[in-house]
Image 1 (cartoon, rainbow over the protein chains, first blue to last red):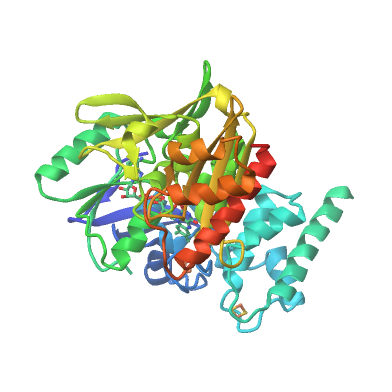
Image 2 (cartoon, each protein chain N blue to C red):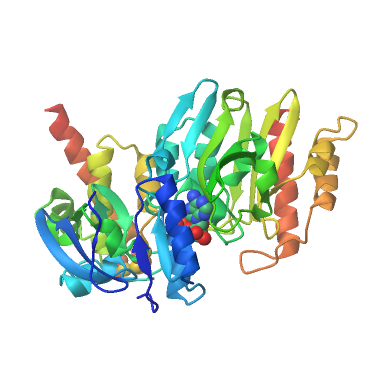
Amino acid sequence: MPPIELFDSATYSIQFQVNSEWRKVRVRAADTLLDALREGLGLTGSKSGCDNGDCGTCTILVNGLPIKSCIMLAVEADGQQITTIEGLANSPVLQTFAEKQAFQCGYCTPGFIVNCHGLLNIHPDANEETIRIWLESNICRCTSYEEIREAVKSVFAAHSADGAS
Amino acid sequence: MIPIDFEYYRPASISEAVESFQYLNKRKKNPMYYAGGTEIITWARTNAIHPGAVIDIKLIPECNVMDFAENTLVIGSCVTLSALSMVNPFPLLSESATGAADQTARNKITLGGNICGRIHFREAVLPLLLADSRMVIAGQQGIRGVPVHDVFLEQMRLAEGEFIVQVITDREYLSLPFVHFKRRQIGNVGYPLVTLAALKKDNQVRAAFSGVCAFPFRSLEIEQVLNDKALTPTERAEQAIDKLPAPVLNDTEGSAGYRKFVLKQTIFEALSKLGG
Ligand SMILES: Cc1cc2nc3c(=O)[nH]c(=O)nc-3n(C[C@H](O)[C@H](O)[C@H](O)COP(=O)(O)OP(=O)(O)OC[C@H]3O[C@@H](n4cnc5c(N)ncnc54)[C@H](O)[C@@H]3O)c2cc1C
Ligand code: FES
Ligand code: FES
């Protein structure tokens, strides 16, 4: 990987692919990826909840893997492939969450959808236990958990039905 | 938002990382090695640490291996906890790793970062203490291999500018019978009240603990009690908690009294399962 372009002390020009489009952005080394997405690129779908790695509202995919963008520096994303909730606008997971009304205020929803999308890509045959472990990374303050579980179950059921046909 | 500024370096080799540290240290930049960065980011955000530069060691190839070499398992310090569990070369280590934080955070937290962190728990070190693993450490003097027991005494004791490159474990330990219990106050995610990892070698139980005192530890004195066949398992559990190396934690996760109660039960269960 080529060295990052250094502007002045602690400011860097980085490039990454966000939702399939290459973007160049100038960041402080101390900017989190969440800051850079929201403030640098105007991608405000990833929410700031705890800023501490606990709640999961800021979850994005880095090279397909769910990562909490509040505990990743933007400079670490240089050269990587990022997917945010904006990139999943037409995804089956998002549609199923809407159909099953798996939200109340909706603040946690982007994080849940991104995480579920990552799970579907990485473990398309995830069993209930794996689904439970993965979704423990996301907290919903409105306690929409029942509806979220319903939505996720039907995403996986639809996926395995597709695979079988 | 992190309220301080620091510089970011991304060396491609061990020697480049060590040289960067020396160079930045001379310039009074207070450099820190940076792996998953989860602790550095959260502490810097709350103004608890003030690095002037971070040296991201994640791209160093040696820090990313997870492979068998002759009769040993070699794990790079930057292997993430989730990768460890997924590949599962050392089931007790996978289980300890799966206990820390949550699945998504584990995609970022590294083995070396967990062991070298400043929070009390550092749960991934427990299996390494039980398996007499060796640490490969790089610094200005070159690369050295040291038994974990010589460098992990309550916390990692590294000389200035040193970092962990790899952890090496003899193959014979990987498949020994083991138990791992992580007891939390509530739920399945979060810091432990008590974590106990134990394995059985040559008919002797080895046990290491986190969450009990302000540091993770393995104690030979406790193991002596746990293996004292003259005592019943209940007596062994009771006597073991009198041999703790430091005061029991007393915090919002749980009072010292409650922790001792949970610890006693957990030791009892471990002995029952391992047939102590
Ligand atoms: C949401 C959340 C929940 C958590 N829950 C738990 C838990 O239940 N149990 C638990 O044990 N931990 C838990 N942790 C703590 C986490 O494991 C530690 O903070 C760990 O340090 C993070 O690893 P990292 O790779 O991100 O480290 P970094 O933030 O990169 O580094 C942490 C420290 O280690 C040093 N360091 C990193 N790598 C090396 C190396 N190879 N050699 C020498 N020094 C190095 C750094 O300089 C720094 O001082 C949790 C963290 C989060 C964010
Ligand atoms: S805002 Fe990132 S985990 Fe809460
Ligand atoms: S729907 Fe409101 S936080 Fe989850």
